[in-house]
Length: 414
Ligand code: ATP
Ligand code: MG
Image 1 (cartoon, rainbow, N blue to C red):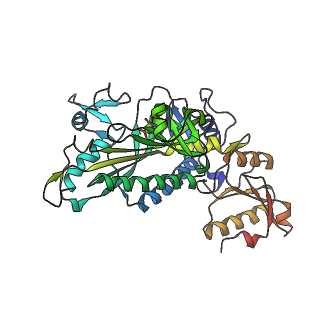
Image 2: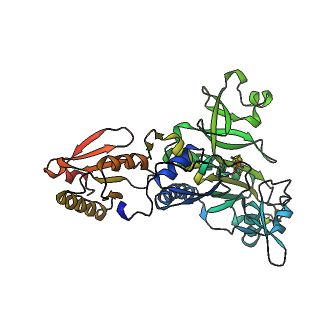
Image 3: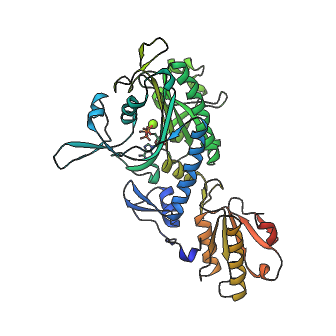
């Protein structure tokens, strides 16, 4: 991608009403644009990051047997009445709308109900289980406060996964695999070292649900960590009897602000029983599948990475989700030799499959470097005097500032 052609430009200031660091940096660097509070557009750079995150999650969910689907955003109130979740008292984040004939529709905030209803079509025998589906789908939630930038959207992309099993043991075994898959996602996205599996209140059929909480001062949550045992609990379950059950005491806990980057649940037969899903077991008896649900907010995850991996100059993307691997900067855009050198290097790099943003703009080197720091691509390749004199190229690591000098040939992927 040539930066002179890029749809976005960097800007000095974020909108004055934007209070969160993640959105300020992402807007200034041109990754996202703000429509209104809690509503953001993803622009070319931001979409590349989202796609990288999506791909990591997709690989991990496929690895545990998930099958990707895409369900509708418009939802039928009837199925939500079956589970008693249509009522605004029960779910306080509903966005609802109406057909021309005045009948109501929901804008999906989650998909347990439609997924369970659909299962009725495809499950009849124990041989049809387990089944695991997941999607990347836009959720709508009428959040009371939206001050955390892309970490709390009123419209946001979620990966939600649903699993259905013949019995509790099968759900339990899958649930453990899902925990590991989630850990892999956070590890690969660069926030594994700060993310804790956290005991949270469980709802009806299991004692706990599990949240994935990333330690960060910008977080809206608080967790309590026992470092010795590597156990964390959230505020809902901070009760002496529960702590005793986990083998920890209140005194052993340290408090930390955190961001909920994921949440997984065992529902037992909730939703499947309410939506009337049954299957025949080996004896021909009707049974109800047990189910679990597993969510990750992609914008929440991207925002968390920005909160944690940034400095006074801008964003510091981990290579795994960065919009590009290399930022090729021509520091002498008025020099014809430098232009042809940089053009040629850009062509070669892209031809050989490297992902490169090429700053070919007619601008001062200082301005280009400042933009490069703001955008946060992992490796900056500088075309300057040294390169032209046939010596070495300067490659600067955004994360460490380390300068490596390499021959042009060394840089090219084989
Ligand atoms: P919160 O407590 O932060 O409001 P939640 O518990 O209501 O979140 P879940 O229903 O558990 O959210 O959704 C699954 C995941 O989706 C969350 O763990 C989080 O990563 C993400 N998520 C939830 N709400 C939002 C939002 N408004 N914007 C972006 N991501 C979100
Ligand atoms: Mg949650």
